[in-house]
Amino acid sequence: MFTIMIVVFVIGYVFIALEHPLHINKTATALLLGTIMWVLGISYLPELVHDSLTEHLGEVAEILFFLMGAMTIVEIVDVHEGFGIITDRIHTTKKVPFLWIIGLLTFIMSAVLDNLTTSIVMIALLRKLIEDKKDRWFFAGIVIIAANAGGAWSPIGDVTTIMLWIGEKISSVNIIIKTLLPSLVSLLVPMLVLSFTMKGSIRRPEKNVKNQYRFELSQGEKNLVFFLGVGILLFVPVFKTITHLPPYLGMLGGLGVLWIVTGFMHKRRPESDYNHLSVNNILTRIDTSSILFFLGILMAVNALQTCGQLAMLSASLDKIPVDEPNKYYIIITIIGFVSSIVDNVPLVAGAMGMYDFPMDHYFWEFLAYAAGTGGSILIIGSAAGVAVMGMEKIDFIWYLKKMSGLALLGYLSGCTVYILEQML
Image (cartoon, rainbow, N blue to C red; front, side, top):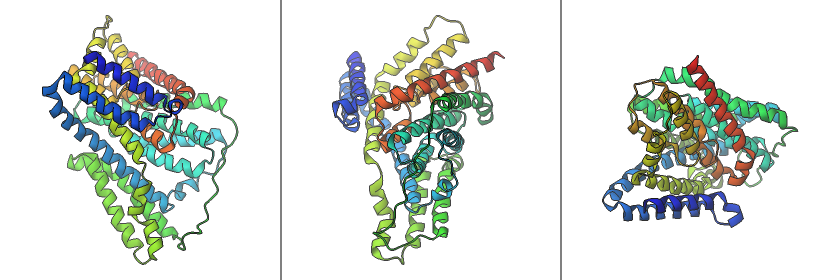
C-alpha cells in the first residue's frame, strides 16, 4: 500500500498536468486524488489516519480561509476602482520596462506582505494593465517567480520562513542578510534573459463604460477603499506578531472591517447600485475552483506526509555519501526541486524534525531559500503558483514550456550565489 500511494499520486499529478489535452478539470482531479490518497492511507495505517486527517484538515483550512479573505479584499478594492491609484502611474507599454516594474514591485511587496497575498494583488493589477491573455500569462509567470523570491528572504514572506522563524531556526535579521542576494539573483537572472528575448508592447484593456449602473465613485471613496484594503493586508503580519494567532484570523477580521466600512459608505445609494458594490455580490466573483484545487492537492500531499513517504524521501537524501557541507548543499538543492512537485511546507517540517542544527546555521538559511524559490519551477509548486493558476486559468504545460526553464535557471543561480557567499 505504501508504494501504491506513491504511484496513485504520480498518476494524479500527470492528470493535473495534462488537464487541457484530457479535458478533465484539474480541480476535479485534485479533489478525487486527495480522497483516494486518504482512503489508501487508512487501509495502510488505520490507527493513525483518523487523528492525522483532522489535524491536516485544520492546517489546510487555515490556508484556504486566508486565501478566501485575501481574494475577497482584493476584489473589493477592484470593484471600487482602487487599483487605479497604481495603474494610472504605470505609463509604459514597452514590454521590457514593464517587466522590470512588475518584477521588482512584486519582489518588494512579497517580502512585506507574503507571496500568496502579493500574487493575488498583482494579478488584479495585471488584469487592469494587459489585454492579451498570453501576454498576461507571461507577466503572471514573472509574478510567481518574483513573489516566491521575495518571500524567501523575509521572515514573514513565505509559510516556510514563518515556520523556521517561529521554530527558532532562523532570526529575522540574519535571514535577510544571508538570503537577500541569492533571492534577488533568482529573479534577476530570468528577467535579464527575458529582457534580451522579449520585444514589442503590451495592449492596455479598454476602460469599461458603466451603462448598467447610475453611480460614479468619488476619488475619496476609491482612495479610502484602496488604502484601507492595502492597510489590512499589511496589518496581517503585525496581527500575527502581536497576538501569536494564525494569520487567517487577521485576514478575516480585516475583511469584516472593510465589509462594514463599505456597507456604511453605500447605504444611501439606490438598491441596484448598493447590491453591485456590496460584499455579498463581490463574494460571487471569488474563484472557488482554485480554492477547491488547493484543498485537494494539499490533502493529497498531507496523506503522503502522514503515511511516511516524505519522511522516507528525507531519510534517503541524508544517506548521500558526501562530506559536510557539500552534502547538505546537495540535500537542500534537491529539496528545492522536490518542492516544485509537492508542497514545501511538509518538506520543511520534515527537515525541521530530522535535523538539530543551532539557530542561524547555514542549513536553515539555505533551506528557506531553496524551499521558497524552488517552488517556482512548476506552477503548482507553490501557493503563489496555484493561486495564479486558478485566477488566470494558466495551462500547466504552457508554464512548463515557457517559464519553468527560466525559473530553474534563476533557482540554480541563486543556489550558486548562496554557496559562494558561504565559501567566502
